[in-house]
Structures are given as structure tokens and as C-alpha cells.
Length: 259
Ligand SMILES: CC(C)(COP(=O)(O)OP(=O)(O)OC[C@H]1O[C@@H](n2cnc3c(N)ncnc32)[C@H](O)[C@@H]1OP(=O)(O)O)[C@@H](O)C(=O)NCCC(=O)NCCS
Figure (cartoon, helix red, strand yellow):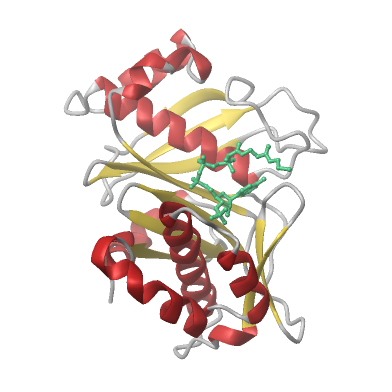
């Protein structure tokens, strides 16, 4: 069992209390250290084992080692999460395929076209992670760093920073708080199927509800956007927490479910 799986199993009951009651999610993570440096020579064998022919052709098209490891890690995490949500202990790797829509949104499918869960993929720093869910979902992870202070005007208003400060413990540094806001907005962008994608300043933080921003007690943030209700729900909720210098955010949209 990976560390991410262990965190998920331990804290999922609490996370579920904060999400819509019929939400089903599985979270999986793949440490990228297994793929880089001296281990990068193992990549072609790993790719051949876990990707189907179509995915392998796409993977072979990436020239940068970082992109190759992140893309592969995201696929492994999403296939594992999807399989777990479907209740399959053995993952049918070649039969589970991840394709992307025109705008880059990934979706899981099978060679024989069976109904599969919704998925969302993210990678940052040492980790690739994915969720599979019975509702349209969004996951984002982001390594915290000072750079966020220089770009804060691109995604955070003063009102939002005030809401965030009053919602979170003093124990979180400003960089960590801003990284959490960034990552929750990225999760919203992935969750909502809008064209063009929602802008970071277009997504507005309304409130923080309880929680300490830790895996055992995540913060629930609610957002809205100016888009018409047909293309974006009026209120979007995202769970977020901070662990091991990574901000995590995930959420699911109401109404549309896949069983
Ligand atoms: C995708 C995006 C929303 C978030 O990416 P990010 O926070 O920088 O990076 P992350 O690692 O967290 O997420 C990347 C993953 O998001 C997923 N993704 C990409 N586009 C997506 C979309 N439109 N909706 C949902 N998920 C998307 C992919 O799975 C991608 O990983 P992969 O390429 O390895 O499969 C951001 O990259 C973005 O705004 N992209 C611009 C999208 C765009 O304009 N596309 C036009 C292409 S024609």
C-alpha cells in the first residue's frame, strides 16, 4: 500500500462527511522518485507493462524526462484509483485506457467501452496523484514555495486572502495558505467543464467552513463563479489540506453520477 493510499484509507470517513453523501472517491499516488535519475532506465519497461499501445505511442512522443515520468505516474495513479473504485483488486492494465479530450481533460475508458469512473490527475514535486469518482471531479496538488508570493495578484483578491486567514490556523505560513488557495482553484477548474476553462480570478472564494487544513481535519472551501448556471454550478465545494509541503485539493460536482 502506498503512503497516499494509507492516508486516504485512514481519513476518507471524515472527508466523506464533508462531501455530498453519495460521493464515492478513491485517491492514489505514485512517488516519482521511482522513475527519475538512475531509475529512469526502468521507465520503458514500466511503460510497456502498464500502458496500452495507444498510450505508449503518446508517451514515446515526450522528450523530457520530467514530463515522461509525470505523465506515466499520473496514468498509473488514475488506473489504480479507477480500478479500486470499481472494486477490482487486480488491475486490468492493458484494458483500462486513459484518453484526453480536446482541452486536455483526461477520461478513463475500457477497450470494450464499459462505463468507468470520472478521473482527475495532478503532479507536483515528488508525486503524481489521481482520484477516481462517481461524479465529475477535480484534484490538484502543489508543492509550496516562495514563488507563489510573486504571482498572488494573478489568482487571489484581498477579500479571499482575508477569508483564508480567518479560516486557517496561524500555524500555516502565508506561502502555505496561498498555495492552498491556488490548488483549490485549480481543482475547481478541472472539475467544471467550461469553455474556456474558468479563470483563476473568475473563481471566487466565498467562505471557509471549519476544519484545520490537515489530512485528518481538512478545510472545506466554497467558491462561485460569474458563469451562467448552465455551464457552472452556483456553489462549488472543495476539500483542502496541507501535508509534507504539498497542498492538496479535491472535490466533486453534484448531480451527475456514474455507478
Ligand atoms: C490543466 C490545468 C487546468 C491544471 O494544470 P496544472 O495545475 O498546471 O498541473 P497539474 O499537474 O495539476 O495537472 C495536469 C493534469 O491536468 C489534467 N488536465 C489537463 N487539461 C485539463 C482540463 N481541461 N480539465 C481537467 N483536467 C485537465 C491532465 O491530466 C494533466 O496531466 P497529464 O497531462 O499528465 O495527463 C492547467 O494546466 C491549465 O490551465 N491548462 C490550460 C488548458 C488549456 O488551455 N488547454 C488548451 C489545450 S488545447
